[in-house]
Amino acid sequence: MTLRKALTLVPIALALAGTAALAQDPGDAALKRQLTGAEQVTQAHDYLTKMQDTQKRIIGLQDQAKKKKDVLKLNCVNDKLVLTKGHMAVADQSMTALNTAASRGDDGARSHEYTRLTILYQKVIVLGTEAENCIGEDVSYVGATKVDVDVDPSVPSDDPTEPKIPLPDPSRPPEATPFA
Image 1 (tube, one colour):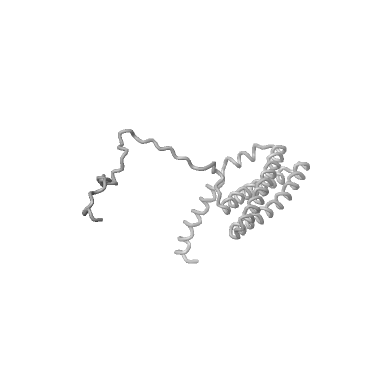
Image 2 (image 1 turned 90 degrees about the vertical axis):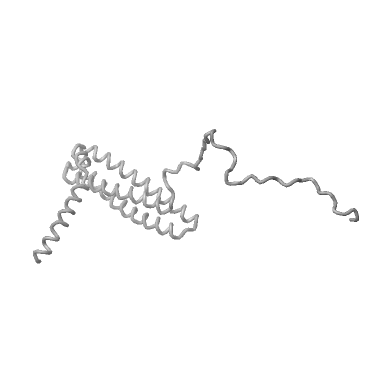
């Protein structure tokens, strides 16, 4: 490798390393260290329950896309559902391994499986959001928009874009000849 290539790659590598360091949330690592074994098992069980709820929601979105007969939305939701099912299979294995490690008192294995479950939980939540985006409905939608307009009383009520033209005289003109 030439010196020029090396000097070009060093800043890129440093930038990537800095980005990876920033991506790690120290609060999560501190929280993981503070949890006891029983708390980790309880938290992991909560994660698994939320993941199952997300999977059920994605299945509901799939049914919705089928009813609308929208192939594009259905394919998109199906992709998210397949990925979610794969993550759920791994999460079930990790939960079993976590319970085994907790019963053996193996803190390293327990911490590893808890971390694995946390990552899977985050991925499934993101897939749930992406599946909702496939359907195109916003979760924060609360109803139809209502607009209230307050007009200042000093604003004239007539329309300035319509000129005032005198109305024609509705009376009938006299007959031109008496021989009609």
